Length: 201
Figure 1: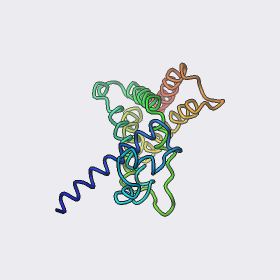
Figure 2 (figure 1 turned 45 degrees about the horizontal axis):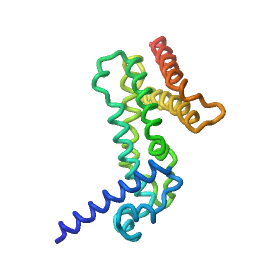
Figure 3 (figure 1 turned 60 degrees about the vertical axis):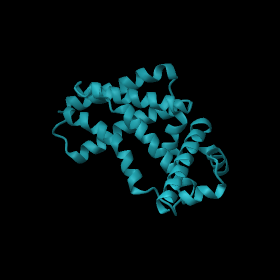
């Protein structure tokens, strides 16, 4: 009996996550409502709170799936033997492509702010670290003498630069770039940073 109950709970959890994911993808995180999600998932409003402590926890699980999809997009076996600068360029272009194709889900990764009473769990924070790891790997080849701590900081700096350009551009800010120029400029940015790192070897 307990096994059947757990099976039903996991099924409801999966339906709620998928319903929330579809709502965020279509309407954005700001328009996410518990009542809409449960209606789409085919359950009562209270059903959401038998699986998740609050709406924020549900969003974390949606974001977890988004991170896994992003990781799959950036894990390119065909480029693993390429020079480090080429790998960094491919990572940046893959990140841009994912942001453009899944804009609302991508934005939810950075827009979601859990309440102070329910901080982001460590397992989800750890999921974000793969981005830094995939950037740090080619950086280690460009600057093999750099300490692990400095390399981690450099990876965050490079990510911040690429993410910032993409973010302000996709949001249509006045300093953003037109979409047709964004891929080229992101590529130039990464090449410039990588060239600077190589000169400091």
